[in-house]
Amino acid sequence: MGCYDIDGGDFSGFTPLAWAAHNGHEEVVKTLLGWEEVSPDKPGDRGKTPLMHASSSGHGGVVKILLQQKEVSPDKPDKDGQTPLSYAAESGHEGVVKILLEREEVNPDKPDKYGWTPLSYAASSGHEGVVKILLEREEVNPDTPDNIGWTPLTYAAWRGHEGVVKILLEREEVNPDKPDNDGRTPLSHAAPSGHEGVVKILLEREEVNPDKPDNYGWTPLSYAALYGHEGVVKILLEQEAVNPEHRDIHGKTPLLRAIRGGHESVAALLRSFAGRQSPVLNLFKPPPR
Image (cartoon, rainbow, N blue to C red; front, top):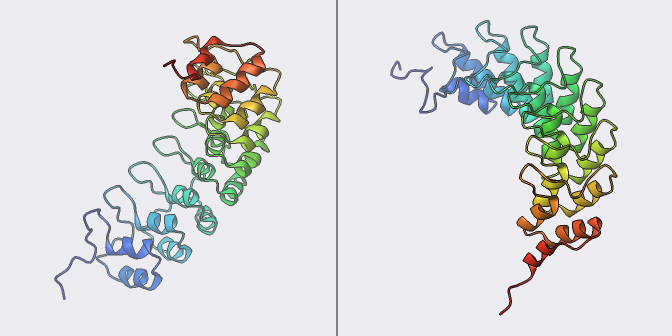
């Protein structure tokens, strides 16, 4: 009719092609690509292209159609530096990941502006299959830290993805006790989240120091005590290297952190392990009438 811009974007910059790609409508995608006015690699307001939409939604058929277009860059980043491969890895779409990795232009270890690689996204989301696929590539460094020093192992430990943690620890390049910019290790991130399974896995490694303090003097036990994770506290206290009375840079012990968090059972456990009564536990007693 000539009265509509067939490649125009909506309020978010999404074009008709972007919407069709996002929802996996292969025939609509083919129809739109038949028009000269349609740009197959046109980004939206955040720089997200139709290929990124298809990749993040797991539409392998649409991904293949778009990759047949010469104008489409298979490794083009959006405004945050995230690529189609990163989107597919983050969402766990193994088929799309394999399709993209077949292209020579695609860098399987390309970081975004925050330093996150496709492996970081897959590890953080717990997608074991994608993690294995990416680790098959020689270009992928399994221990690359992002801008704040978090590695794929750090993210997997923080989120409690035991399967991913095990896969990553099979690689010699991965340091199971690597600190981030704040000095926190993967164990220090697993402990405050209460991920007992991950804590046990990490403690099986000789390289892991169960009592390693961060830049502020907080140990894994300090974090577990503050958040009241009694199971993690018990596991850590079984380690001979763990000092239950370690003080951070402010002079506070795990016991004081437990009291601050209102975790009476954890505080009682720490007190009994220390083998002495602590007057601060009276804070739990109601005031006299």
